[in-house]
Image (cartoon, rainbow, N blue to C red):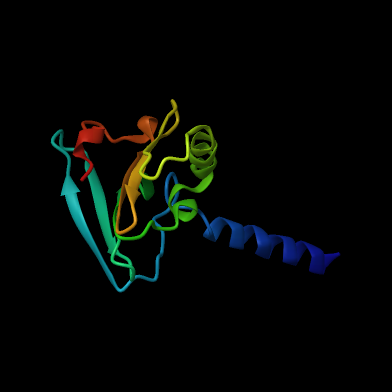
Length: 146
């Protein structure tokens, strides 16, 4: 009985450590180059921008406030692991992509009250962004995403 509770506690701790980026803690990518730079929004609310260049050459930018990622952007030759980046919001992207026609360079957009996701491009030129409207810091707008 005691071993079962210990195993359960370890599984719960491990599940908490595997949070996805959007809405959770910043993602650990194991990238070649990672830099963290502090920025201030135009209204003075503080947030961090965490830039990561993946081994594939794709740049991922996470916008963090209060230890939680409220927005992410990506740009590069390969798509990043969108399931890891978007976490529980990945399912909304999949659902929207299933509605879209299978065009070669189709853009996919999700515009829900809880999440906005835009993704598009083609081989060697992918880009996208995602944000949580309710978690944007005061004075920060989606236009501030780079």
